Length: 257
Image (spheres, rainbow, N blue to C red):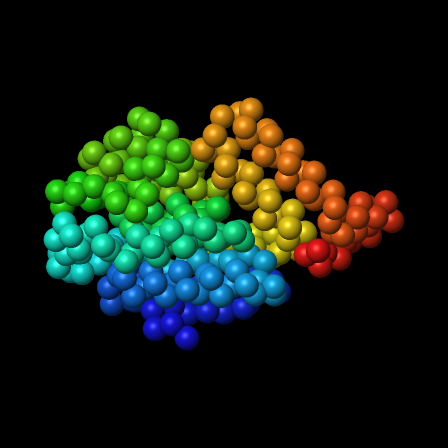
């Protein structure tokens, strides 16, 4: 079991990963990112896992990168930083990833939350990219994903001032899908994971791929990719089961085939 993470299976088909560096407010050091990437690789291969919830503590989802570790690296060290590969592996996770955010999600913590497909935030959550205060800038996707999530003007304001926004503001901007009372954040994320886990896994996977591609391509290309995925699903057993269950007025039983 990883030293910096906790893994639970509280719902059928759903796995809960908890960041576990409480003394450091879950600061994202190389070890944690590497263990998270490796664990997600394992869950990708686990047919019993259909959705993953990622959370931290009530005080901090993740307060940022590990500054002490970062300070030890010069330009060459940054160029050869193993964390880049870890971030890429996390970003390639093909199953639905839901972030349950309480407390601080700053710097790398905000970037990690934005790697998720859905963000559920507690009332006290704070999102920000404060790297500018250290004479640096976001370096793990913060400028790119934040702009796509909240638009140019707000992304510019957050990155260039280093100021954080609260959960309700994040929801209005589209960064967060729902805001809950802090004690119910993980519970709500797990409920969403349970619903997703009940759907046809291949359809969920291809729908996620199509939605993510929509951010990176023009409409015509996106429509072609969508239609291709739609056509591929026509050959799946789960599609036949879903249609048959609808016709027979019963709940479908999806197998992932």
